[in-house]
Amino acid sequence: MRVVLFTGEEPLYLPRYLAPVFERHADALEAVVIAPPPRPRSAQLRRLYGMYGPVDFARMAALVARGRALDALDAVGGLGRRLAGRYHSVARLAAAHDVPLERAADVDNPRFVDRIRELDPDLILSVVAGQKLGADLLAVPDDAVNLHGSLLPKYRGRAVAFWPLYYGDDRTGVTAHLMTDEWDAGPIVEQRSFPIAPDDTVHDVYLTLADVGGELACDLLDRYPTDFELRPNDSTPSDYHTLPTPAERRRFERRGNAFL
Image (cartoon, rainbow, N blue to C red; front, side, top):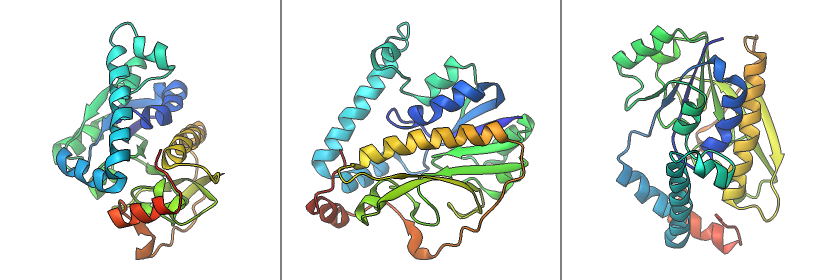
């Protein structure tokens, strides 16, 4: 089994999500591809500021800065991991397990697609990649599966830990689905759900999504190759959500919900 993993890079959730995948299946990983969003970093930060507001944006920035500092300390004899008990970057995880790492500014660039074709993967696995994988890239492997942090078809798109809390759901989960050239729209392979506690924050839900998603990814790789028992992923435009607006954030907070 040859797998190419497409993902992003941040210190809070993805290293936690992917740690069990590296621990149990590093020998199957031909490469890890960091595929950041195509928007400029400044534009991403402005949108996140609108979502979190000034206070929680500053608190999240502090958590991210702490994670990056711990990741930097890992260069000093693994000090960051000894202090926190885990890795704080996908790049550090890949290096620790001798998995080649690549960064792709444009995953649909023909030269990059040729590079993935040379790896001859059986499976492309996507976990919170920042770019949509196009048809040419998806045609390379036998299968391409994305892990999305909601119970599809609900909450396609972004801010997957926010919307279940915003709408008062008592459960959410992770969906493995086949990838198409449309976001989060392919047939469903498997779903894992978990309860949302009354006092859960957005941060709490993201942490649980990472734990549940990591186990689902490992279970899928344990069984692969196999014939997927697919279910429809019938969605409507109203199922798609992007980042919340400042007005939605204020409504969320007035009801007693919290980000952190």
